[in-house]
Image 1: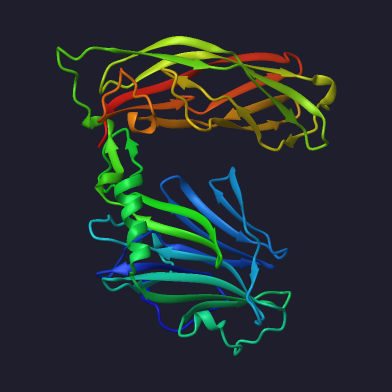
Image 2: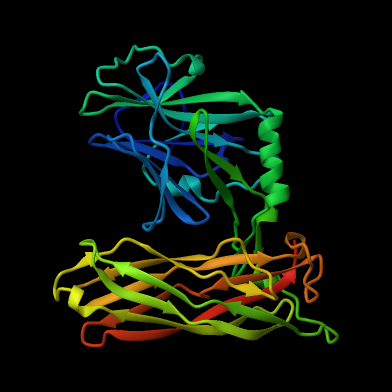
Length: 399
């Protein structure tokens, strides 16, 4: 059930979203407390995104169960008992999509829709009062006139408050929308066109005001389908790109500080043949893992900290600025698994001083390695193992 935001909700979790024409204009956010911790959760194109504000003052952002990013700690307002945790700024614009089936997703839960008039944008801030802060304590001066959406007392006597303001869409924020939708213009490629496609961009950054999350609903420019591909014409030639990747090594360290495995990625130097509008997969070397079984205790399970495998490839001697695989190791007491997450990039001539002769100015070569999430396993009985690495290549016109 969707309600119109009015009085503050006390204590229990709140769900809210900006609204246009009586419908949510972005994914719902949910804010709640557990003990002395405060959480905010939403969806985005990458899955479930979650902000956590800890009693220590540390703030984390997680995308899915594995990708964690440390944000700036909670920030004290000058001459005030209040501290600022984060800001969520919703930047809607003409032609942006709307998230599908938001009402259905609520089931029997309540949510608050905050109508946003044209020419304005919604800003929501989470602030926390020091221990002993009363419900009647005035808000920080910079938030005068803000509406309180939600508040909750924490067991340690602090007060969590969610406030909302409706601000005029100024040139600074118009320029941000223009940049994300028309200049940066990230594109999500679906295997088939969704019935109700929706892409929402989240940009986390820190400013003098503290942590901020920009939420930018995107339009049709942000998605495409592989079903849109057209078969190459008879005169379309196939292209060859020289793919090179250096030898790379990473260590897996157990929680006790001991090295329990070494990952090794072979050097690669080969030709990759691609045809325009015809995605293809190519084998790109071998990933090896070798356990140091003497540092493992059979039957003793653990999850190791993610490690980084730095391996910057080049395509026709053009390289991305960074290419670091994140590896998530886990030991079940007998088998050590290492999950290697995908990296992707788009090779375009405008990004290089010397254009690639194989690439037109209105073309891009999209690369994803590994082509699917790669999981490699080794056991104490068979401590050395290897897995083939495959890459996905897609030559297409820039949309």
